[in-house]
Picture (spheres, rainbow, N blue to C red):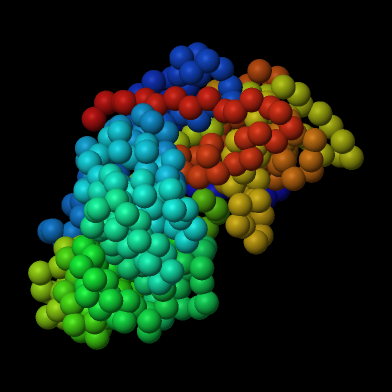
Length: 410
């Protein structure tokens, strides 16, 4: 038997799964059947409110929509955050339906010319990731007769300790090495671009509160140094994010209140060059991850070689990360339960496997479960981020998972 991750607090202690105050079976009927992602809008709103309460006054909250770009999720979160951060022309088009362009920023190392033109024409902020990309943006702006709004994404000279994906302190496709940033800023200012500031992001998915505090302090110090060296005051600094959520046994959540308090102290001592600068943290997973549940129905329970396999109608083509095939070095189990009997006494050890013809399609590996029968529903938690759109949904021709948003009671 192998351990599973901790249930999110909103679901702990339930005897039968409810989401946003509604029974899961009713929600699946509304969604149209399994497999389905169910998203709790009230949980997302509560998460944003908690973050705002923890952060120092004046520090904004941005949502990185790559975590979950579902239309209903965007419509719900856009009014309660200060900005949306996108990473493609497709995401930009979605963001523009719910937020004005001035509140949208566009990052990513491989922006095509048509995407740069789309962002410049709309008036979104481009986070340029190379000198070459900056040159292309300027040329497109000249052709359109528009002044591009440009921030410089910095590849910092430090990393976020404990992060699942480290994006700083090393050679990287993301951002411009810090040592080269001042020269680019001076050039952008000299040619009359609307230079908006810095985007400094060192890594993602860390649960180490101390590491986040350390990285934010280092980010502020780096932003001040770069501003001094460039001889230009940034209007805005995106401090990045990197807050993780507890997927696996032994994981503990980030103490966002401690992060906010430390950020307030760091801001109080920031460089003079940043005295009038605006700041924001950019989060995706932390805001929406715990609000999602992936539900998939049992189609078979079989024995093989002394092991029990619970076969479901979903799989890694919908929820790749739970299978351990999305950046996980050692495969571990997400929190999982039988939705009809959340508090059922474990009586079997079983692996939950999907419907795909590959041994990689294993959603839970040798976990303790109550008795399971065909027709039961397996619930996989922490499914609100990097699920439907981060999984190979076209694999083997199976249909995509349904997605259903529950406004819930606030």
